[in-house]
Image 1 (cartoon, rainbow, N blue to C red):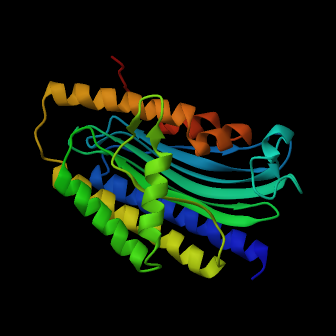
Image 2: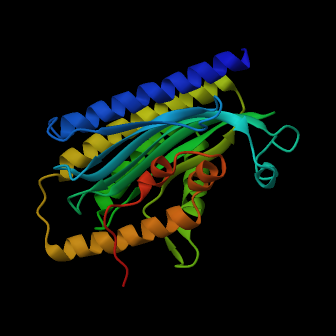
Length: 275
């Protein structure tokens, strides 16, 4: 399959899943809180792509949720080339993806994150995953979450869940705190075995995330919470912010490739606390 066709298929899917997730969020908010949409360009002087990020703040369910789509291209800065597979041979790149970060009003509903991307240099690969960060432990919800992920992974390859769960646990870890960011999920990168199979898996990851966040929210939205629960949520959000600013690959990639700063930092919570 021609590489340009692969790029179109991937970026069109990412735009489609952005729309689908935003529609679900709007329905959960009963269309009373609207997305603020911002389109951006990577360069004002030449065509290097861009994207659109959509944000809701102070909704009934979502204290802050961002859904970002991007499709950018150009050349990697010299200092960044050695960190990207295939870029040392040729600095030109093309990248598209979608990312979602949800911070909730109700502390019984965990923060949730999802992203998938397709990156092309002299090599081409998919990456992404999803993870959940609760501030109140719920072992049953945790087990259900991982069971859903395992079922989805098993549809594609029986080895995926164990591999990608371990990768997620290792990735979403704060070494300076000696603690995990949340209860994990799946994480994968440099996935380039077979475009058709890999793309099918990536699409299933997106649809499964839709199912998971809808189910978690509907199960927990009416649970009562106290001020101490909100304080616990704020502390957990502080850890979330630390990870995204210190370790997150997507944040570093976006900043080092001239992405939109507001779109890149949309993952940060509206209110966080440190003790």
